[in-house]
Image 1 (spheres, rainbow, N blue to C red):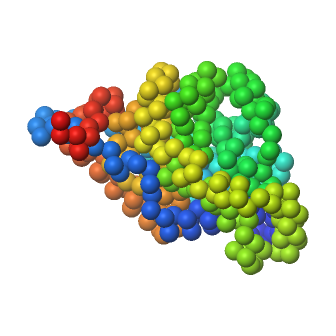
Image 2 (spheres, rainbow, N blue to C red):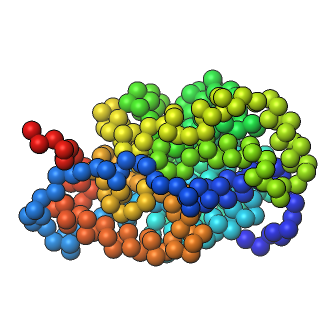
Image 3 (tube, helix red, strand yellow):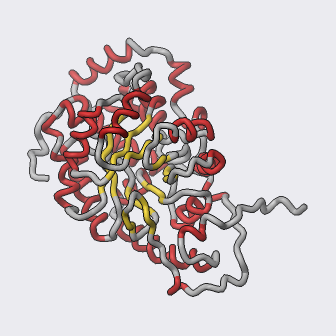
Length: 368
């Protein structure tokens, strides 16, 4: 990224920077509650495998992924977030990981922000990249999002709770289903339908499957909480350095959404969300035959493994990786996970992801 960092950016771009700062702040102060840390699997005392027998690769969308986890959608849309995307893309390339960019909606209306996304493909020309756009967009917008990063797949994020938490957010969702169907039918890459940190029920998974996506990302509660992030953004005192014009604009927007009681309902994914582990269990019960992707509060290699055991094909990590990057620890974290995963496969007596999915979940307190 070689653009002038002192250039005055739009309110939308400023919002991207706010999201970035608040995700890092949230992860510095939060205890992840994805439920994956409480999963108990039936572990054999006689594993009968060698670590050298382990194949940790995954096949998805007709592609071969070296590892069953990837860098999930986070950011883009401003100079600062473009720098972050460039760093993440370089790390994805170094460690052979897929990567998703954050919502490209801003790049549809503000062309000057395209570089903050396209830098990912420039940095990692041969990597697997997910484009990302909201369900409120058209087929043409989706194709543009794909073009910007020369994407191998497209994520459509379903963030109704977040939108309603934002004073400037969307209030119309009736077109989402039609938009999604049209995009899936008309784009040339696999489409993943993705929640944004609030999880999915069995019925929700089944409803999305009826639209025939390539995969479903349950994105459960327990990780980054965008309801809480939007509530924090709406407290003007938190942003003392924001310029006065932006503050005045936000005041006008907040007048249109001045309902503290309802805001409090939306400000935590513990209120409306389904944790990641339960979302995965619901997805397994739905039995749609579609690949399921885990996301939401994953913080270590065992939680990646547990998500695979609960039926996920791959695991995406967003907020935790962003926090680790801010601490200059992301590369070491990924290196550790890539060392630990083959050992976990061996501990549980499995040699590949298909065998992981056959492991039985047990209740350690059921002694009957």
